[in-house]
Length: 105
Image (cartoon, rainbow, N blue to C red; front, side):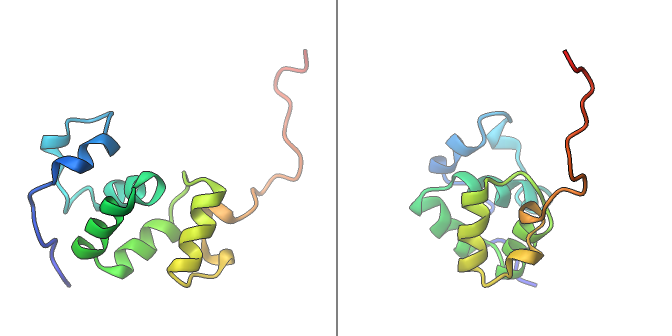
């Protein structure tokens, strides 16, 4: 198991973590959160940093087992990571066939 190369977070990543204190984020314990942000919003520099600092299996896990990605992002990364669409949780259809109406007015 490879550890994160650098515990120092480069300043250019800060813009992807607008809702938390970036300086306090622990890359080991919040790995999925970090990967989800970088997969969804990351630019070329962020993605390059991600590849150098996380294992491919962790990146695949972050995409396959968690919702919250746009369809475009999920499809793109499924192709890049060679993950069948049926194995990407956020690309699966929801279980209900019709939406339930809670307030019909």
